[in-house]
Length: 86
Image (cartoon, rainbow, N blue to C red; front, side, top):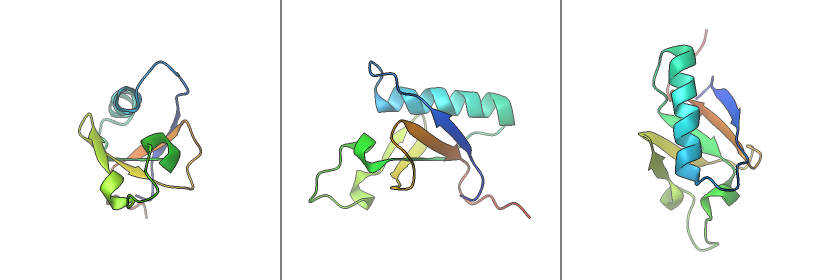
């Protein structure tokens, strides 16, 4: 994903899937397109040290959630996979 929207949600009472769903709804309303991928800090996925990053992928609201160490905790980089901007 080359272009996306950065979303911040530090609500300690909400689960990750709900946070991704809120970001996806906002993205869809703002850009008129359904997001397909969301990158989050690996600590937000509670990855075991023995678990590979690929195994940690989950889906929330139809959006694939992937770990990315370049994304800060409580931030969500959400958008459409495979979209390039010229």
